[in-house]
Length: 115
Length: 113
Image (cartoon, rainbow over all chains, first blue to last red; front, side, top):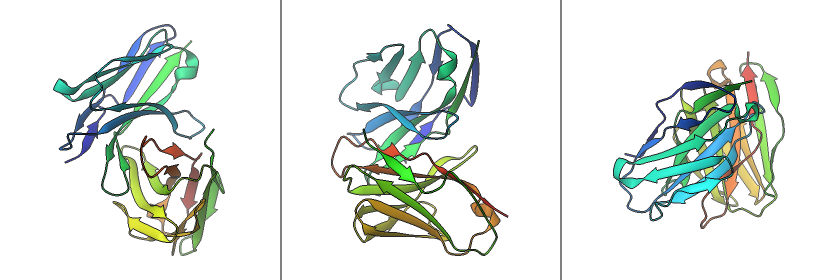
């Protein structure tokens, strides 16, 4: 079955701390895509990154980095030197090619960055 | 930039009313989706459409229907609203082929009283 698990429901850090959000997935597909989205208090989900199953290189974008490990079925997200503006709910998602390529979402991790 | 808009940010309706939620995208995307988001449950797919007039049920279609008469517009209809349909509703779109990420609208927070 396709499944995404984000075990951390809430995380609270102080500004400038590094924080890692965990994502573990299950899929029977040999080819698949994983995603991270950010949902700020305004409500709109903002696409952050896409990773395909053939590319295990880590990705860095500014203060954000992602670690994809196929061996452990994990796709973790690290924010370096967190800022208050990073406060949001973060979702990890897995594509499911049936049903139009719907996304299967984890339950989300609410990150609170305090000044 | 991809733009997905939804007709209302907040909506309050009474039990039994027929409710229309509208979604419009401006990127000529073939696929469009309606999700609902509830605390502790994440996002769940209600319906999706892969072309004009084409629709498929998602995971929780009961109590909902959809309409797609034009490529850019995808409507979600609550035939007879009930209190258990109080939720955040999110519309999304993407191209039919890769790269597969979906682009979301701002959401409609619906309260049924």
